[in-house]
Figure 1 (tube, rainbow, N blue to C red):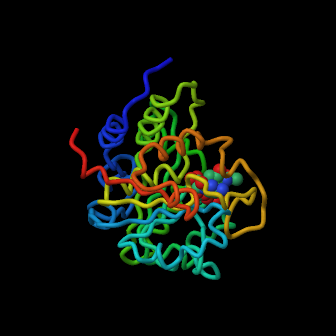
Figure 2: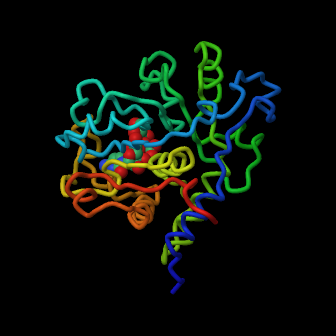
Amino acid sequence: PKNALSKHDVMCALKRIKVNTVTKRDEPFARYDFQIPEGPLQDGTFYNTCAVVSSAGALLGSRLGDFIDSHDMVLRFNNAPTDNYTDDVGSKTTFRILNSQVVSKPEYKFLEDPLYKGVSIMIWDPANYSSTLEEWYNHPDFPLFPVYKKFLEETPNADAHLLNPQVLWSLWSVLQNVSPYRLRRNPPSSGFIGLWFSLNRCRRVRVFEYVPSTRASRRCHYYAHRDDVACTFGAWHPLAQEKALAETLRNNSDIDAFQRGFIDISGLATIQC
Ligand code: NCC
């Protein structure tokens, strides 16, 4: 069996993966005049405390909302709402990580919904392992590019960036290196992308109901009735490996993790590699 990597090794492996987003000078985005904002997301602001709020059904009834809102930065996923759920998930949103389905499928109303205004956005879409940006542009998983372009044109001061898809495979490699099993080559979930991004930007990261607590249920999302255990344990994404890895990185008590429902991880800036 492969040797288990130490917590320090894993943190350093994550630290080597830089937050790499597409710039307006990258082809083919330059040629097609995408109005991608200069500079990194939120101008690279570094936060003290960050809350990463999974969309898990187990958040329902948690009453973690005030605690979540007390963090300097709050990151949410996809179309997860706060309205009507603020007692459990809070009301503050600094960042959203969106998959390309949410951007491209008309049902999510990416261009119109106020959910996507006044927040910083990182969008991801998987490209083949060795694709160039050109190839990705011509063959995205979902047709996000025209909608993203329009969003940049229509939204004053939009702070919306595309994650360079190579990052997804770098993150996948970290998951493969800590796993004794051979993983399918599917990208990590938005949750893992959000965790890694926050570890880059925060001194301390708290992740809510990613590692399931005793509230865990069959319910997929806190904001919808649908039951599906695959949402919590994974089917397409290597979710179980992501969560096992996140669990090994936590610094807080079992009571916090399994009764209150969050793990606490030190940011990457706090470690020396
Ligand atoms: O469900 P989703 O994820 O939007 O959830 C965001 C992140 O929260 C964590 N999560 C969610 C539910 C749950 N019971 N436990 C959890 O830990 C996961 O880390 C998850 O990433 C995605 O990752 O982008 C995903 O998006 C959905 C869907 O596209 C969007 O919700 C928009 O409707 C995907 N579902 C489908 O495609 C059907 C899901 O696989 C991954």
